[in-house]
Image (cartoon, rainbow, N blue to C red; front, side):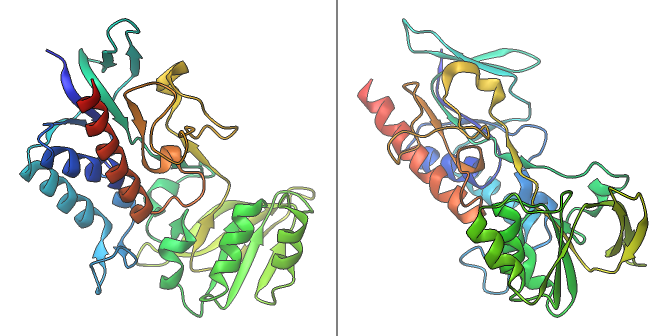
Length: 309
């Protein structure tokens, strides 16, 4: 028999959807994928998730969410989903993994978006130790110290501007000699005294202190090839996110960046019974709390869909 509901993804959106769906007695089956807990498992202290005035470690928050979902009856499959298809005549979805196929009447996709990094040696180990892709999440940890932002678009400018509230200096490192951001955003950013642009440059190497935290970077001039050291306590990547949506094929519409297009402010996609929540369908906010909110919405909409059929 087909599952009533399959949830794909084990971040704030997927776990919240599972909590709501379980309490609605849908007995969802959740596929965790290879990164159980999503991007929050790569962060340290989370201070901006409501309900934790003293903060909470990212992995602990995700473990608590999983435990809560399991308490109400969510079942877990520790596999990656490789594809999803739908039988137009029956409306049944086939969710495929490397080991087998599963059938479901409704599916919630909460697979997140993967931040882009520079693929430098040792980079993966530094994530959460001075290397991050979220100024809103981690900026407050770097008060009165120099930091840098990598990127030149609107997102990079927004991150840099936000960081001026905390850091002593914000170096904006860009591969070109002008920002790609909109004109008004670029002008506003460059007018801020704390923001210091570093043109035609990229990071060649990271440096760490004796605790394994970022202590600086080696910059390479892309025109002359010359290198120089830049002491910073954190590196904020703002070169884009890659939504994990390709495995859905033509079941969903995606925007120019690959984010799933939701219908009319809901979590519904163009395919009946298929819902999208969290960073995979959120090009704007990409926060744990906004992902959780979308997960809640997806579960409610999935329950209503299942009732209707």
